[in-house]
Image 1 (spheres, rainbow, N blue to C red):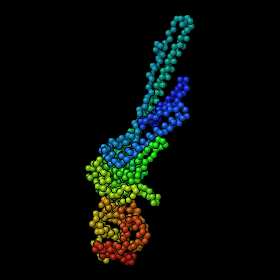
Image 2: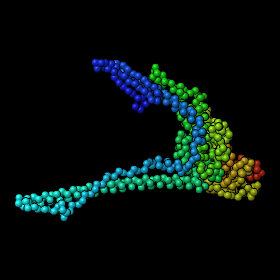
Image 3: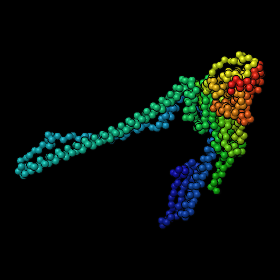
Image 4: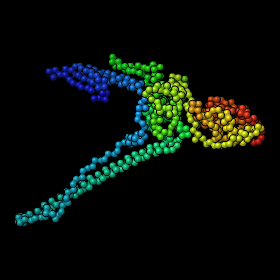
Amino acid sequence: MSKNYIKIESTKEYYKNGNIKAYQSLMTHVKLGKTVKVRNKDHSIYIEKYNLAISQLTEEWRAQKQNEDVEEFIASSSKLHIKVSENEKFDYKKIYERKVLKEIGSRPSRPSFIKVPKLLEKPNKESEKYIVNIKWYHKLFGLTNQVINKIEKIYENDLELYNSSHSEKQKIENINKYKLKEYNDLLDEYNKEIESDMNYYNKLFEDYSNLDDNLKIKAYFEKVIKNFSLCFSIIEFKHLNLEYNFEDRSLVVDFLLPQESYFPKAKAYKYVKSRNEINEIQFKEKERNELIKDTYYSMYLAIAYEIYNFDISNKVSDIILNGFYKGIDKRTGKEFEVCIMSSKIPYEEFKDIDFKNINPRDTFKYFKGRGTPDVNNITQIEPIRFSDKSKFKIINSDSVLDSLSAESNLAAMDWQDFEVIIRDVFELEFREQDIEIKNTQQSNDGGIDVVAFNKNPYTGGVILLQAKRYTNIVTPEPVRALKGSMDEHKAIRGILVTTSDFGNSSREFANAHNITLINGDQLVDLFSSHGFNFHINLEQAKILNCK
């Protein structure tokens, strides 16, 4: 049977005189369950019909297989959440042991040893066989030497056979000994490799289970998702990004949804025998778009299910799931990547969901999901983030607001105190919101001075503040540096405060990158709105040798 599942029985029909009457073949396609008969007396015509029949059966099967694949894709892609929920509870040890054994391969096979021949008995010259027994007729006929030589020859032959068998035995034993050593070396290497990999996975799990360490817990989830997730066998792992925060037991998962090219364009294939061709029946644009949407919603929930299933030691209370889409902007031809789905999924609510009876779109909305996965109308949303305080060198500093007099010149005060009062005034500004304000490690005008943590899971994130107690116009460099810090810390907003002012280029850059600029006049107004009547006198500050 050929690789295209066609079983062929070819025969010849003969006339009574022995001449060929016709060439004939029965072709049965075992997958189609279809048999075709080809017969002709002209061999060239027979071959032509034979090849056509093979081609027709092959194309018909290809069309049927393509239909089966599309039907399976349509049926399963929007029910991925059901498929993962039917999997057994994640048994880390059993699964990683199975993986290690599969990756390393089979245990080395014990070699087949050569059978060692039985060693011949060493000839003994004193034995009866080799003792010369001279008879009287040997002497009479002068055969004494001949008899002696014959016995000597027998002894020498037996000794040679013995030495040969001993040498052969030694040779075989050496070969077997080498085979055994080679096998034992391979076995040791195999066992060491298994032990090393097992130790790695054990350590990974122990660190995840026993340590409240963001990086250790993140490493565990990255490893198990990469190796054991059904969803991420579809999604390219290189587009997965995780962040864990043990303070609020949240896991942020950024992932790339399958690109549009992942989805079939044809919903059916029709074989046309008369042309021996396959016609594609294309999805209507709306139909295909709905298929993509259904798949995205289903996959989104399936990923959340898998991650909670992997969380054997219950380290995660909330999953923040951000789905990104990568495509080509048809207006510019440039590639883009934006977040189009985002929500916070608490475990206590998620664990009781019956996946067989849900509509994934409604479940996404139930978890206050933001965004719509419509590839024909991509709408970018801001992904939900949590505030990882461990990334900042936070310091505790006492408030200095109440110790300042009304005559205080903000531009002339100590730079460290200036950073503290900026924190103080924003604490007042944000006090009605769930925002925590902290100073970071002080360094003379270097890095971030104040960081704000907005704890709202849907509108919140990190806000970075820089305080510039300047007497001259702020150049664009600090504004650009703040944007770099925002990218590094995935901040949702940046605020740059100065006692002086900003130039046009700084304002243009800030407007384009979600940075708020507060100049000296605005800063005085901000303090005034909270009952502090400070002022700024740049000339006085310059005289006092302030920057």
